[in-house]
Image (cartoon, rainbow, N blue to C red; front, side, top):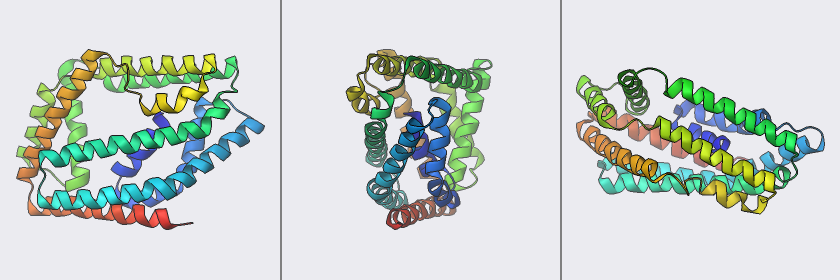
Length: 274
């Protein structure tokens, strides 16, 4: 699940000049990442390659045109000035595309996963544990003030990728957001572990037919406290983005619009390449 989500977000959030390079290398990246989790050789390795090729072909033909339309419409909405409805539309669109991609990927790899033996499943479990430790190191280290400051710095960097250098007032608004929004990393880690445990149980029980819907709806069964925290954080994030939108200088808005237009053109061009 993390593999496809990572690919999607890399395409949407990396620098525009990197989109084509990243996408053309996506099948190699997925093989590399899948190889870290799946200890497969011989015919199983060939089956994994075929599943990745099939997913990449589907993604190019079906998903990229949707991304192109999304980026083009987002560019127009940013150019006009954001509204609360625009943010809900953007969030819902991204989640919908993620669910579709995850379901399609799971459908293609499920037959292989259904034939993994106990040792291979244990290998997946150990690699997931390593990922969790890396998450802890990155997001749970240090006292709360330091963690909030690091979060603010990450948000500033991401915003500046889109609109260019922020003003001091804009940076301060980001810091205010980070200071008052709950730190959810502990609950996020527990949710990762919940999803991992449930997914591993599907593999061990051989219930592969349920895998596509399981990964497409990874958020089902969340701790209500975590779900409430996510919703509260999203409301605060929308308020932050609307405040920042009102303070954008003409050059900042123009850069954001240009970035989105470049994404739309790149996604469309990639979807037409054979």
